[in-house]
Amino acid sequence: MLKKLLFAVVLFSCTIQSQTYVKGTLDPAQNYSWVVLYQLKGAKQLYIKNATISNGKFSIEFPQSATKGMYRLLFSQQNNGFIDFIYNNKSVELKFNPKNPLNTLTFQTSEENKTYQNYEIESAKNKQKLDSIQLSFFNTKDETQRENLKNLYAKTYKIYTEKQKYFETLTKGKLSNHFIKSSFKYYAPHIIQTPQEYLNSEKKHYFDYVDFKDKELLNSIFLSEKVTDYVFYLNGSDDTEVQNKLYKNAINDVFKKVGEDLVLKKELLITLMYNFSQLENVVLIDYLINNFYNKLPVELRDENAINQIQEKVKLAVGKIAPDFSFEKNGKKIVLSELNEAENYILVFWSTGCSHCLKEIPKLYDYTKNKTSVHVVAFAMENDDTDFNKYSSMFTAWTNILGLNKWQNPIAREYQITSTPTYFVLDKDKKIIAKPEHFEDVKAFFEK
Image (tube, rainbow, N blue to C red):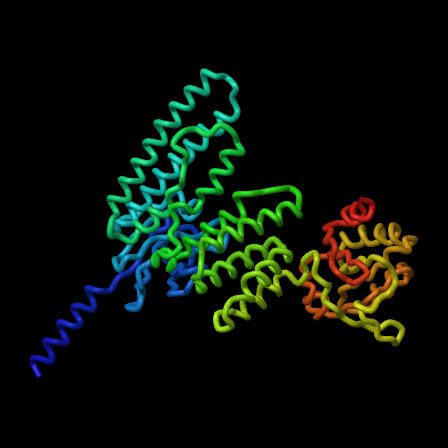
């Protein structure tokens, strides 16, 4: 019995000693009341725990099952209200100003986080200096200045590479080493002569130090962030067609690098599609689905994620407008079956909206004699009193009464959060424009 008791005491003691946590202080405390701990894995944030913030302080114990990796503390949904840190099975204590968390973060404990933070600061400073010198070189024609810039670039490049080696050596065998090695950005040893050469070098060497087979990188969001930056920020064009072509080329480059890691490929595809859904770029979403996603094994596909992405872009330019039916003079009419004109303006408005009462009459005067354009005016109302009054003035339109206002199912289907909201449709009811105001509608048709 005594042996069992001693064993239990020892076991309890070991459990206490092995318990790890993350503690934080918000300074100043302000009115933040909660914090959520996530693990950043693949392209996802995996929920771990949450805690309350009391007088600017919080503490979260890591579960026994928690694995080492990159974690995130989310304390606000706005203004970058989060902190990322490395967890290597040791407790972490930190402090930051919640109004500027990224630039005020300090670690009271965790040497590895301190080292990684110092690396990021040093690396960013040297990268910024190299880019600044390179840009100055492009912008000056003075030969003396150009020679000085060449020399300054060479010195800064030497400092940059030496600092990289220093931090790689310092963190050898640690988790942070994987992120440090892959964060190294290629710079030419000598200054580049033209902007086009510089851009070519950026694209050619972007993934030089990124190991797509590194398990620690796979268990973080490092790769998805790196890929997102490459696809969305390295190339740009004001021409939509050219921009989409640049996106496709970048995507093809990425998946050549990824190779046959199908799980990683799936994670990156979902990440890219979510980003394109934010841009309402259905062309690239379809490209990713048809050329990559549909070629994944069935058991790897995440139909829920695809459905969520498609839901986000169902009202994007290029999509067929969600169909609906309504009654007019006792007859059922379906939006998709209207055959009144070459183009349609579907406008959601309300008689209780002062802005609408200014714009809608202007829209009527502008469209009433246009045979190529027909307006479907959806009035979001609580009753038919004012609707009957105003619709009698807009006799050239198809007027629809949408009762229950914001809760009207058709208004909800079209995600209406403000009035007036305009959709311009072609004869097949495909969305071809989403003007914000009447003047934008006018400009579209007069373009």
